[in-house]
Length: 138
Image (cartoon, rainbow, N blue to C red; front, side, top):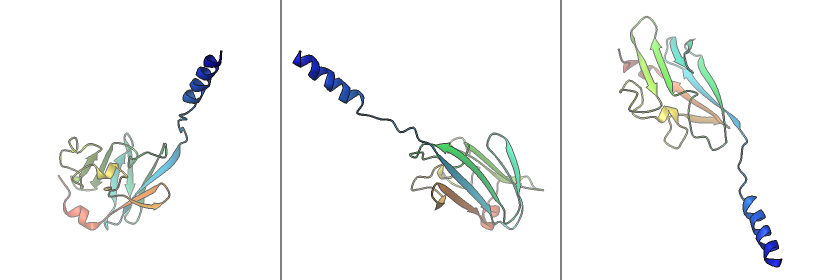
């Protein structure tokens, strides 16, 4: 009987030993437009916004605290209105076909090599500058 009690106690300790954290938090991503011109941004599964110079594009995602993703979808397109120029970035460097303004997927991560800067708790920002326009693709 003593062995059964000990076995039951051990099973109870093992089964309750790992508690999964299911809390979720809101992560905010901001693209500041400081290019000197208005830009059209497409993201979030077809969401299209005209971002004036000095304005910003903002999106939010809800995830667990260990989340390491950036922006709110796996794709971002920035177009210069009145031209056929811009950038198309996707979460995978292979899928971007070299049309993004970063060489890898740093736009879609908040790890230490990200281009995003943490400006507040779970709030990340990237500033689009005039130099960005110089290298835009057709």
